[in-house]
Image (cartoon, rainbow, N blue to C red; front, top):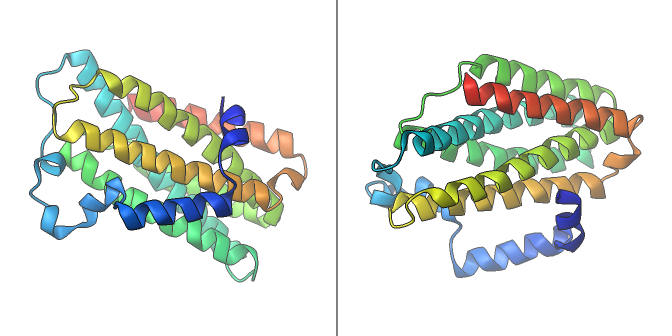
Length: 230
């Protein structure tokens, strides 16, 4: 699914330029969560109440996984940066993607509180596992670190796509719902940009690329299912 999408999206430099122009015209959806003057806006303080238990469970599972995923992503990039941060070519790339993930986690933490979602019980595992994955792949070399990013962001991009479809069932007239979907769409696009950056910087030249991608991708999918439940 993402392979098809990736073939028609802008390449990283073009997409980044397009995002910059779009942001200049209209702030990104997530910016409201970082703006103290908007802290009492109903879109960031309320959650849908008149929904079925099944739909409420869907919302809570989605945000629990998203928060855990952004936590793990932060620690993956920290692990990579601790190993490769001084590399003049790779270090700045990792730092740039890491800064974006830090913002993602900040916003997801706010969404978790807004929608009264219990964080995953696997919080420490996500942190430790993420750091280990990032550090180990970075020790394998720059290409392996980028292959890790490619595999992780592929799974996350697919996951955010699935969430956007599932959340169409939420009441669209509630002030928080359009914003939530816009934030997820924004974060999905960020993750796909990271995916393209990894490919542009030789992720597919990593030793045993297919095997590494399969292992990392499968691990991410298992982690998603576990965080939904715990």
